[in-house]
Amino acid sequence: MAEKPHLNIVFIGHVDHGKSTLVGRMLLDTGTIEQHIIDKYRKEAEEKGKASFEFAWVMDGLKEERERGVTIDVAHKKFMSEKYYFTIIDAPGHRDFVKNMITGTSQADAAVLVVAGPEGVMAQTKEHVFLARTLGVAQLIVAINKMDAIGYDEAKYKAVVEEVTKLVKSVGYKDDQVNFVPVSAIKGDNAAKDAGEMAGWYKGNTLLQQLNDLKEPPKSTNLALRVPVQDVYTITGIGTVPVGRVETGTLKPDMKLVFMPSNKVGEVKSIEMHHEILPKAEPGDNVGFNVRGIGKNDIRRGDVAGPVDNPPSVAKTFTAQIMVLNHPSVLTVGYTPVFHCHTAQVACTFIELQKKLDPRTGEVSEENPQFLKTGDAAIVKLQPSRPFVIEKAKEFPQLGRFAIRDMGQTVAAGMCIDVEKKEM
Image (cartoon, rainbow, N blue to C red):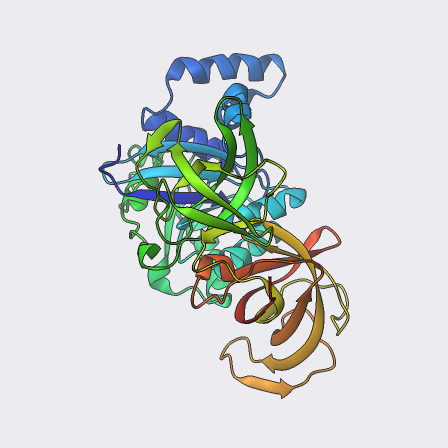
């Protein structure tokens, strides 16, 4: 398994456009799960009157694995193609899951945006595309799903492609970063197998081939180690086990780590992924690691582990470039929404609105604006309400990007350009 390069992919898109069904289909058709498991779920689904949900239940149904698993809020599944070993981060689509979706996407090397053929672009399609872009997902595969529901019609497919193309370009994706694929998750056409009913007019890749064509992201092994903590477990006979994804650097046994902002130091005893012991963990690996000298209550989700001689930056204040996506009125100095950055969620106050930018060119359009509204891009200065690790996006992109949420929705997203460090 270790021979193949590892990629994390997230399935995003509007609720009910078929994300989980498509994931289930990919797992079945690549032989990752067996037909009898699907049949068992089909039977359960039919008994509960939800006949076409059996694939979605694969993602939701492996209860015991979920309970043992690394993260409860985003179901991790893995499968192989000829080229890659994939971990699928299934980010649920409902609005109240957008915050999980944020931590999910910030962990993704690529995203599959699922858009239903009959409906096309919906509100959440837009929100998820904005987030994927702002959180630095550089490669996007757009799966136009439910082709069976529109009679496998080429003209309808092309119309949806055109609609989505406008959307992805409006947020700054370039042609070479986005690929389109028609699929029927429920019937299996063009997912992992041939184009089926679309063979007459569609000559491009299947979704699986498109996944194979993804480029491997550069490994950030040359940077200092950063591991945002997702959860902390106490395992009998082992001790304290933080769980998280290595974002940069290399995690090895016997390393001395400091967890910020808790400012607790411990030593790595062992590392495991998918219940196998690893000699080391590299960027992209979702791991649990046992740390000597740290109690379960010393650290928590949102802390970031790094080397003692190069600790994660704790911000007293930070300067960021943001894009206001969806704010009902205007945003002014003193506004204090919640920032979601890596695995942390911290309220931060806008203390200066420094510059307004033209969102298309990035050039300054106004100095010291009085307020910001939906559609504005700006440079702002922020003050966290409690200690919070954030890094400059150009140094540690994975720890420098964030989404801003308020009133149950994502109001803005952005990246950190400078940090005034807090003395710890």
